Amino acid sequence: MSTATLLLGLVISILLGTLFHLWRGGKAGRLLLYLILSIAGLWIGHFLADLLNIDFDKLGQLHLLFGMLGSLIFLFVGHWLSLIR
Image 1: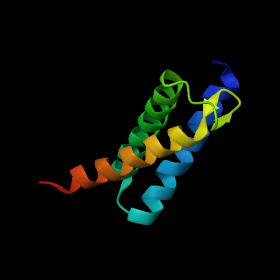
Image 2: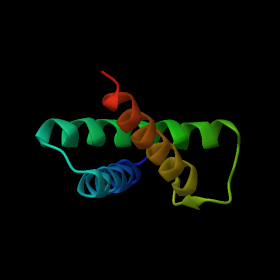
Image 3: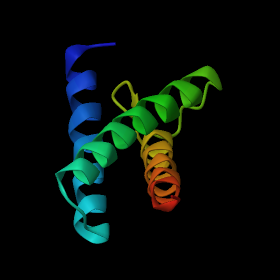
C-alpha cells in the first residue's frame, strides 16, 4: 500500500469523524473518540473489502465505499455505546 493511499484514507476518515462531531456535538474528548473510531472503521472496512476481493468501489488502492461504510458504522455504534452509563 502506497503512502498516498494511507494519506487519502487518513484524510477521509478524519473528515468523517469531524463531520460526525459537528453533527452530534460534544467536547474535545468526544472529538478524539470520533476520530479514533472513524480511522479504525475506515481501515477495517477497507481490509474487509480487500479480503472479500471486492473491486467495484476502489479509488486507487483504497476501497472507498466499504471504508466509509465501516467508518460510519463504527461512529454510530461508538456514539451509541458512549451514551450508556
